[in-house]
Length: 150
Image (cartoon, rainbow, N blue to C red; front, side, top):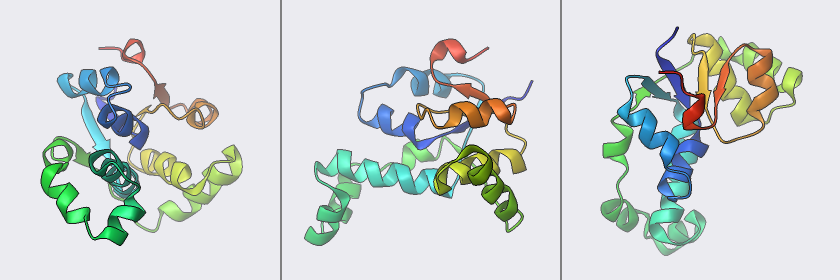
């Protein structure tokens, strides 16, 4: 059994908002290797700005206060606990196949394609869009602490 779990941004966002922190806290304490990609970094830091700044990220940009928010609420410490997955252009046909096969939006298809390219067999996500795609690709979808087999 693989010790690798890919984290969808929904896990990080709900942890940051303190609405559903249990799963991420559990995974951080576990022996699993936790992975993210560029998509997750972008999606998460966008929401991190909103949570930390109390305003829409576009408003923070307009007001010139993004750096202020990051000085007060810098996610670098948290993000340094996670491992990084990259992809090259071989992801393109897999990405398009995932979109077509499962009716996924581009970011979700990139997440699934990244997992497939890197041999990741588990995705932690609160996003219901992954349910049929994970089932079809034999990837375990982790939505709660009880889904994690230790």
